[in-house]
Amino acid sequence: KKYDVAILGATGAVGEAMLSILEQRNFPVGKLFPLASSRSAGSTVTFRNQEITVQDVEDFDFSQVQIGLFSAGSSVSEKYAPIAAAAGCVVIDNTAQFRYEDDIPLVVPEVNPHAIAQYKNRGIIANPNCSTIQMLVALKPIHDAVGIERINVATYQAVSGTGKEAIEELAEQTRALFNHQEVKTEVYSKRIAFNVLPHIDVFMDNGYTKEEMKMVWETRKIMEDETIMVNATAVRVPVFYGHSEAVHIETHKKITADEACALLEKAPGVQVMDRREPGGYPTAIEAAGQDATLVGRIREDISHPRGLNLWVVSDNVRKGAALNSVQIAEILIETYLA
Ligand code: 11C
Image (tube, rainbow, N blue to C red; front, side, top):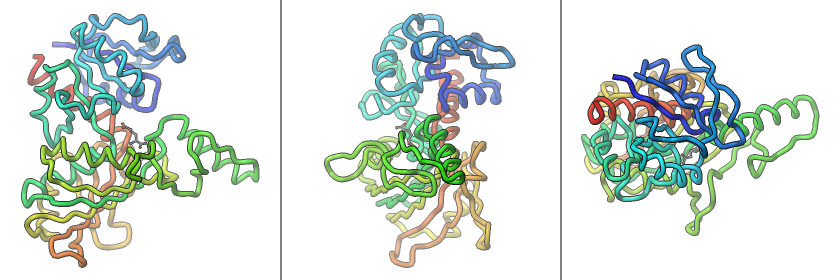
């Protein structure tokens, strides 16, 4: 059986990755409809060696498709996801628009695939934030084994998380600096080239940024455990692809580094890369373009009797967004739509 699929935001960094991942994983796509706002409509994308014209979402009839992969920003999803769902299209939404609503499932396939069943509520499934996804892929087996009480995490997030314009800004600023030219700062509030910014998304009343609070809200919802405490600092770094995270956890029961390593070695979606020698750890360079969440630097916390440290790296555009959405779509068709 084949499924007709719409990709909203098809010309963005995540939309482009969705197209190539659908192709790579041989997703049973019947007709593919790349969609965008009127600004990008009329351009073309390539899918299975065919050029397809991007249509304006405003004129699109969603009853032509069974699945919609949305990644064109919250306000676009706010408007078009209910329209698509009402037309019978199941929407897998990459934005934060619906994530925190009780009747909308928020899914990481390796963690809570059963939640996909709730697509029936409103015809919408939310894809979590990239920094949450990779952290939970690594922490789920540990939470199942010994229970996680508290997570302290500092992220090192690539500019591709912001989008194509930020990839361009990092490249441009780097070029300008090497050529002794004026450096323009448009996307970020300070220069990102050769700098590190402790600021992702908007500031909230409690002093955290929204990116940090997303990690709190989403961890509890996806792990289905409101008791997990999360303390996050989200940082933008001058890396193109791949988010890295220094994750420090406190567990209910003690787990040793060897035990954690053994669990992670057989965990779905995880690749352990943890030789205690120079280069024996993962970095964004190895993660970029890969599907797995790479975990290294697994060690017991010398400052806490039930503490464990991990270094978690993943491709934010793939597992953090496009791949996770396609994996959700795969379970949706195999388990519910077939
Ligand atoms: C970033 N995590 O790296 C963001 C991108 O809520 O889906 C994804 C934002 C989101 O900037």
